Length: 531
Image (tube, rainbow, N blue to C red; front, side, top):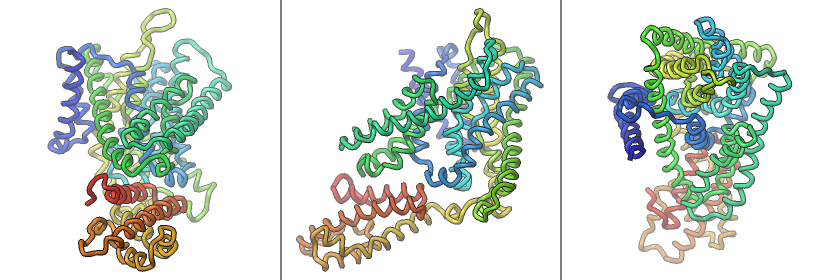
């Protein structure tokens, strides 16, 4: 019964956070953190401690898998160099910058380095929840970086904990750990996707396909963790591959179902994760005196400021280095402006991953004595997360508006268009490309040229007219028209994939267009009504 009470309480708090946030004019994650803090006062929750491995396994694979499914592969390919730099070198640099500040403020170096490793990686789920107002390219860059940086942070964390426990690491040890974490995670993600591919091809029921889709990230994560590779990276790589092969591995019905299920499921997981941050903060606060809390709060403020400043400085240095080494015109056009770099520094939020890493600190040393400064590190990490949400969250829209007044942000022409404009352009491009192929498609479908002409007349507004057959039309023509419509839809899907590969259409636009095509086909098959 106690477990049910906790589950219901968490569910109500998640719903309340979503409902109250607009009225309080606070970001939803911050509202949920505050509700989690309040929820910890409920009798029975004062002893609630969720093991960090449960946090990592229960929340992260599903959340990151969905983010990888909706992350632009073209954006990753286009800015791969920058993404790799920020997800590796930047994470290490930030960990040491935070460790230096924290040690200067009174935390021993070993514990400070653990703290730095915990809060160094920006969080993909926090970014998705808090940074939605970003220009499209910057948002996708932040998502891509956040999907891949946890492996680096976990390597730094493992080394820091090992040093605190009295261990020693050679450069070879560090290199081996990094290689196993990164490349092991990538290879296992590829292997899981390769195993899933034939399995998905044999599935036809929408709910069965989506059950398999739900299991995939957890299988990838578990397989990677068993060999000490990056489970996060394995889940992300599997998601990227499956997203790329979506047309071959799923059906219109299953994709439509997934587009409704995953946003709901990830919203619930996100809400529960932010509630957990608030609950853990409350449970830790009672372990310290008021003066100690003031000291730790001051350290947390210093850490939060360091995270923003170090990111801005790193971006400045990176831009100068790239500017000196790469003078191609297209590279100059894509560089982020000074104001855009300020936006990037403000928009890098920390979230549940940082808290889970901090909670992973061992309880005791090898001799059985308590691990020094464990509670202090966990509380400072939690407070730094909350400070980022409380300060950077409300500040970000204002900084974005300020940056927009400064001109070029590094976004390409496509990124400056609205989602509706991109979708409209993509739809028109596909229709224009399929029109010349109608005669060949009509021949393949076995229909007359007259039917092909009728279909051509309907292409411009096919979504609005599909299914609105006039009762006075010839039944044979209707049947033939529907057969040709199926051929047209198949060709439109092929062209959509081709246009994405040729980068004529972005992945985000393609996902919207694919969903619309799915609705067309679902209606044509009588699965559900199409608007």
